[in-house]
Image (tube, rainbow, N blue to C red):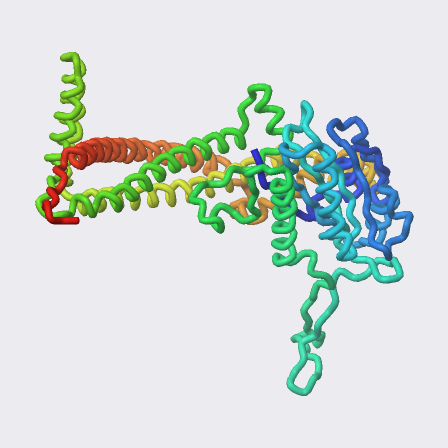
Amino acid sequence: MALYHFHVTQIKRSAGQSAIASAAYRAGEKLYSEYYGETSDYSHKKGVICSEILLPPNAPPEYADRQTLWNALEKVERNKDAQLAYSFDIALQNEFSLDENIALARQFVSEQLVSRGMIADFAIHMPDKEIQNPHFHILCPIRPLKENGKWGYKQHRVYHLDENGNRILDENGKATFDAVPTTDWGSQERLESWRAAWAALCNAKFAEKGLDCRIDHRSYERQGIDLIPTVHEGPAVRQMEAKGIPTDKGDLNRWIRSTNAAIRSLRKKIATLLDWLKEVKQELSKPQQPNLGELLGDYIAIRNAGAWSRKAKINNLKQFVEAYNYIMENRLFTVEALTERVESISSQVAALKAELDASDKRRKELKDLLQQAENYVRLKPIFDEMNSIRWKGQREKYRQEHERELRQFYMARRKLKDAFTPDGKLPISAWRQEMERLAREHEAAYARYKPLRDDLTKLLQVRHHVNVALEQRSIEAPVPRRDKYER
């Protein structure tokens, strides 16, 4: 099944990330970081089919070496909170061969990134026991290259000027300015164009191979598809799920899929009924036409005429009674009344969908908060231990030994920055209680789905009965007698 996944993030020191470590992981290599003085070894990583660095014409040739490239970038980025690289994670297609996927990825990188002066380090990951979905990663330095191959600036200052063209000063006597990016690589418009370009490349390949499937870079909401999007699971979650170990993300996606299936089922039935009501309205609106109750009576007569057993006749009568009682209880005597009933159910489905959307969004937020809180609590003793070491050399050695854990701790602390209570604690218990409440509310909301589904099932039953009766009446209708003098 064709799928679309195109995600771009940033590799940042403020999140405890390293460009060297990121490149080593994606390429499945062993690389040494001069900035951190440590080695990242992912040479044991499986599923990395190929990796390559594509350079623009002005890039130094030695940057084709992965360790040289990323050490050069780490060296020029001196800020401890520096933004280092753009990280692309893009799904490949199971409908294409390995060679076709590699060629498509290389074409995208060349046309959309390298042609804009970006250095692109990309790696193809294909399915194996660890990786279930084919995809490729791209790392691109955020800092651009100048024409002479030297690293350029990521931003430049645009000073605020008064009406006389003089710089405006702040209260400290310093000129005020805006920091403007020197490229459009980080803009929303550029990201949108990249997403659209990848979808266009894949769809062109689908057409070339004579396949009907297509992908769309737009969100469900922008496509007008009224479904809840699932969350990206990642290889670690998929490995656990494959072993039968349930995960929070797996549970959430199962909940989302079941909800989407229910919503799809309801909307399909509603669309079927509304289309039918448009078609049958003219027929039932003719003068001296039977009402719905009479047509249901016709239906039972037709069914019983072809029934050979008493059991069949009893079953036909049961169906008639159910359908007749339904239209009588709900006073559905006309097409207008039926239409109003279907539209009312449609409005209830829309309200149910909105409620489930809000619940889903909050559950995703809470799951992330609880995960970060778990990391924070688990790793804070390591952070505290490091800060308790008085000697700088020993402290630096300890930091290097626990680099990975500290990166996770810094990320958790940053994401939880606004969540701490005034006494410096995390409301973990309150979050868990809210998760439990949302789960109960979901069950209650999902329970409201069943009566809506039952209503639509009965309306579809009425539709079937009426159609059979109308068809029989059209067969039995007398053919108008032609006058003998008519030609």
